[in-house]
Length: 332
Image 1 (cartoon, rainbow, N blue to C red):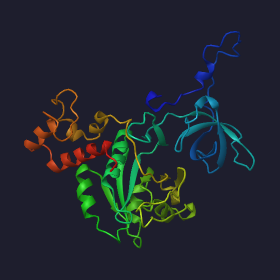
Image 2: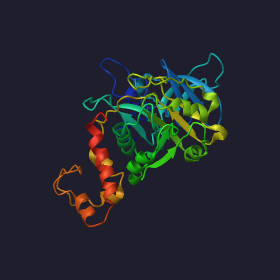
Image 3: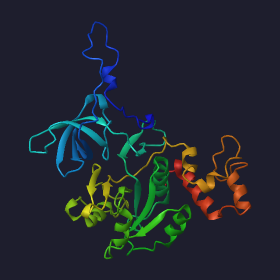
Image 4: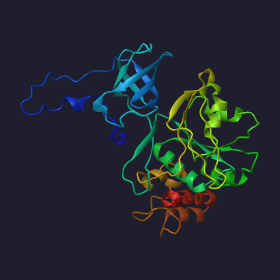
């Protein structure tokens, strides 16, 4: 398992060299490969709601202590031991975590050294942004994009409240980066968005008050996610979702993971080199950059400037990429 995600692949920590004056019970490490696998769909006060793969049973489980306080997050595929019948009053135990394909992370602030994993095993990042009430914050969008590119997720910009403002400006800002854009009108069909979500595990992230929970309720009527309002004085939304939850789309078309609204998105865990890797057409022009080049606007000798001057890449694409970089340390 990749050490990047900080999850132990088995209970090996519990089977290390025994302490002094202790007698090891066994030298064999446990094999959980024959255990049923579940998907973690919600966490509440130390209890983990899981769906057993290959069925519809909802299982409540605790977590093995060896996995650590934050060793299991929503979206994880986990090995389950104990009673996995899902019957009332039963309790299973999460004994191991299957290797993750991706982890979306953030830090509380840019100077915070502690990463906070948000969601595991998503393949698509849906950035939900209102066109008005509250007004869009490109800085926040850029910062979430940076985290998404670092995690290897495909981005999708979902613009809500299209009845209040035009999406043209945001389209012009993000389409040069290759970011797909879906515009949502409160009275219009969700078919374009549903088509983008089909076949994916999508994590929905956005500023508080942008209508994320309302959108989830339209996509999955039985979800009954709590909705709130935007403060008329501050222009800020109220946190209505307090924890991440994974929900299956109708007809098993895919999964969406709704996350609590955020007001900041720290990126101290992201290195600029991991961002440029998400743009192969730009990365190929940075091989001759000076050592330690940040690729930001004004960086001396940056190969991106040379490529733009030679007509090898579009100036608008480089400008959009650099704007995103600039917002890594900006509250947006």
